[in-house]
Image 1 (cartoon, rainbow over the protein chains, first blue to last red):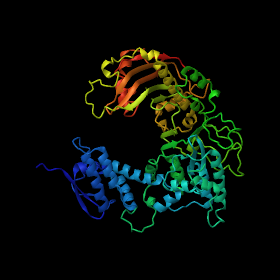
Image 2 (cartoon, each protein chain N blue to C red):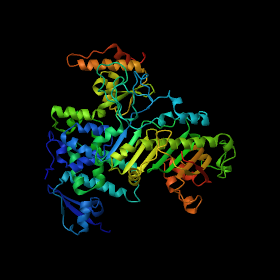
Image 3 (spheres, rainbow over the protein chains, first blue to last red):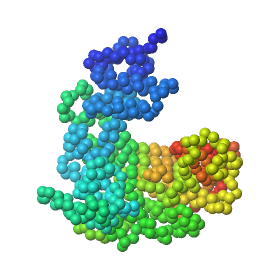
Image 4 (cartoon, one colour):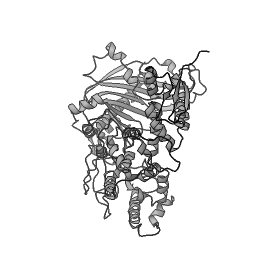
Length: 238
Length: 394
């Protein structure tokens, strides 16, 4: 029985982990220490708690064994494992980001950052702030200015039939139309929304109407749907 | 430094507070979509200050507008890709004459024009690649030039907030070349100041071989007509007479026109974003891909392109082309290409005299031009007999 070389890692809260050297070397930071011969005793990692360190080690183990040429783990299986692995709460996720950065584990850093990026991608600013507890530190004037500069980022497209008669409308307006509101809430906002049953002329009238409703919405207690809106929601018409 | 112990479950601290700017940028660089990045700008001051430093951006263009939209007709539809303007473009006329309608008239992309900012008044000079339309000009309603709810934003405009883009990918909503269902046509072109190389893959029909599931026996030339058994790698005589050659010429010229039109459009973006390392202009159909790497981008900045006189695209130089053909090509994954054609194109002043050993054996750039399964098709095709052609500049 040949002994596999192991290194000892010590977390910030004093937990000790013994891992194979090859696994530990997934961390470029640790790899550097080992190569500089500083790894004879336990390597202290004051920036990483035991809980997070154990997760990082899990990740490294999984990814070391997969880089063996004899490994039967396919790329797909590894991806599935990653998806499962990263399904953690936000606190842990951000802890993992910091740990991956400190320990310089590239794959884990990519995975965690991509996960956060995916969370941000589909959301409105309000949703992003809510999810991550970010404080809106703009003054109202500043915020309006920034919104205006980036107005193009807030519009969604409604497309008539198959002709590229595209109307870009503000989300708040489009939400007046239940059908579209549902699509928006299902996050179907990145592509152009096709409306097969509506001609351009009707669509334009509807949009005009919606605008008026949105503008009046502050004073009204209940949004009232006009005839044109009903036209959209009833696919048999138009 | 920052405290990394687990916080209480109900903590309301800003998660991003724990991350230094460099990591936040790593995250932003993985978002890609420029609209999502625009939304990030609004989240907080910190986000707003970091987004301009993002180095990886993907712009998905929603629609492409013709410069020839007549203002009088576009009362209600400000963004029409005019399929009605066929006759106004000399090139589309030329091609319809030559082709007889095999390829849908190419007016769409020949009307892709430089991204002028549309005037907000009644002028309909709304041209170029449009990202999305702004609903700020609609007070007072009614039709007229500025049309319903809309003005347009070009990619140039949308990108102006970004100062350090290194990787830029722009996606058109669809390929410019109208082709019939079942026909395959894909191109990939690399440009500096002018065309550096282009690879085109086409097939007159694509389908899954019904016999694939059962057939381990390729020698049994049953039921599929001209199987590979009698194929000696050469182009059959019928190809020259049944319109096959004409069709391939059309494919080649259309692809080159599409590529050079795209290249022409990119100038303002390239000159403004000097940090670019890699630029890709593709489309949602995966029909055509235009690529430029750092050297090529720099070359364009230093040596401006020559525009074609007839329309808004870059002049295509005189070309050497190599063509490979297979009447029936069956790929390992079961896909079958009929009339499969691969064309590798380079400017004639670049390549060494044709048929030199180096030139002939240098096909790696050809077989790696496309993603699978088409990469395999290309690799299979280059093993066949090579035909050489030349084309004048246009």
